[in-house]
Amino acid sequence: MDTVTPHWLIATGASIEALERLRQEIPDLPPQYLKCLAIGNGGEVALRVSPYNFCLDSAESALDYWLSGTYSKQSVFIFGGNGSGTVLAFELGLTD
Image (cartoon, rainbow, N blue to C red):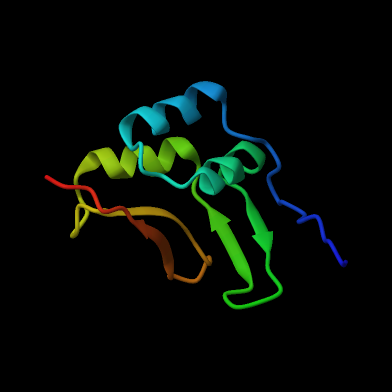
């Protein structure tokens, strides 16, 4: 089995406090997302498939944007992009 460890441009993980704050504010976030933040908080990694580049917003930035209320759709949590203007987001099924 071919396993490849991603090489993160910034390999500093999110603090325990930042991860806990995200969990408290947005409990529906996928556990795999929180794992990514623990490895590369605000990091960037190359991908073998499209979009070929993954830019992960830091836990703090993603939460600040969520709390700002500037989303056009409240159930969408933006967590990163490809570095070329495409954003990546989770649709969370939250209710008002």
